[in-house]
Length: 265
Image (tube, rainbow, N blue to C red):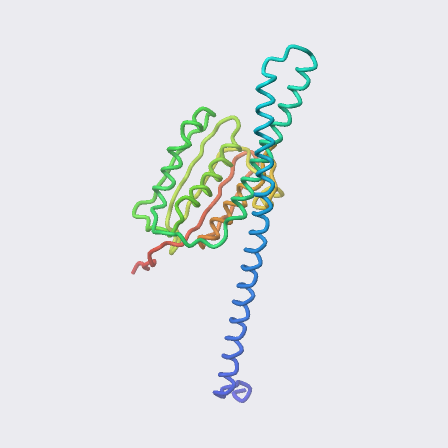
């Protein structure tokens, strides 16, 4: 049996070389994919900019026309104003979709990261959203882990990701409810749970919730949660969701700690 086990230094060196080649090839493929994605994102972003400029001009002119017809005196003027208002709403909707798309396309590799206290980011956004949430009958609660190590974050970008999660939770609770944000540490990870007591999701919806342009909300762009996932992954983290129809949903964000994890002896 021993004769069947290759122990030759030449064989070991050959296997090591083959493994190194595979790792190099994989790195090169990933590099090319990132470069291709960056090029596509740049082209898409440029196209969106080209659309946004005339769209903004259209919106401005529609606003001016609506002002001229602010007090319609004839049935014809009222019909025209009604059509103008419909065009304005569609123009604003398209503008919002473009803005969401540009945010989605811009998220690539993040370089401007610094050690950040996750609890402070969560507390800031909860304080920001609390007045509006309260008017919708939503109570926001926080549960912060003590001595949570810092995480490397692009502050402004991660705030956008978290705001998307909070807004998504609020939309899931049209009749009010409770929104809970909890932080904890699990090994080398800082973890944030965003929990709502809203409508919940079916398995079909849950499976597609991070797909671009997929939305179950009328007027939704379907880019909020996909953008959040891109931002989290660009920080080296992951995001997942659990949901029970009629009871609510829980989004879990895992981010690598900036400090090495020390095993407890």
